[in-house]
Image (tube, rainbow, N blue to C red; front, side, top):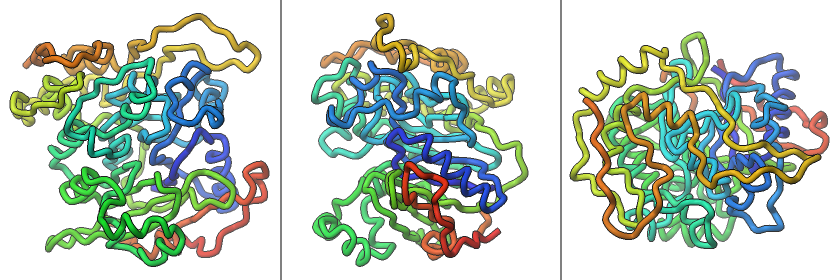
Length: 422
């Protein structure tokens, strides 16, 4: 399977897809999947920009709205996580994951899916110690100057759910890097490129502590990140079991940036499509009863822990729909360049994908619950790799595709070291 990995999208879907198509044409090949490591900016219309955490002067519609409206369709199946510059109101609608547009799948605040026979997990947002354990998901649109930022801060609840995974993961996505990852790559060259990283690297504060815990526990074959707007490769040896995680961080989409990498991963023949993951949905079902929706943190002591029984229940439900996610449904009007005014819409529309998934799992819909600072109301209980690619291949043999000129995609030069191993 040929997979393209992209760093920070920043709404530049058109340019990323054109770059991939250019690569396909000059190399007579086909990319099977695009993975994006955050700052995707799934902005559907002007109102979404009120929930986009960027300075006002940088608020632009960019190109996602065309894919949301159906004017364009992603030419490559795309899976993405959230970063720290997102239209958080839309991602909250899809907290559990779902289609943000046709052929473009959001993994959720935390999530796992299957694509072909590969298992792909991810964690959205960035780590801020002050919010990680101390609060739940209390933010709701319309956001203020504080909550528009805290809404994308990683919470212990989502990491705790991911820590319950037992089956192997092939790929994991995070926006910020696992703290300490620089110990396993060429930190000297990184510091030469980004001198202001040195102090944080030496203090072991560059990156996310929860991501490092997940890396140690899950040991995926590959881990991809973005956020710091530079390329960095590493190889993490896990204890005595011989397993290795190949880490790669990439830049944002832009002229001359190292924002895209294409690799080959051995896999069974298709069909290549996004499918629900049984173990993950069983974990979601078990822990939804302690979903923290206020400024109080989660308490895991009351969560049910019979994951195996839940898996059997979930499996029967998923088999009925062949494990396929529910279809994409638009919940707000898409941007119209010729008509800048549209009817008022609810701040938190219930996304039919989310409603259908929760009904499938026998869970209540909670995302429009109002945030409060007191004790929360009790939630009803639910009814009963084989390839040998090394770090050097990330640095040399995989396809590194910088854009020389965003406005002249056709002028992208071929890159030396293009012999991607098969």
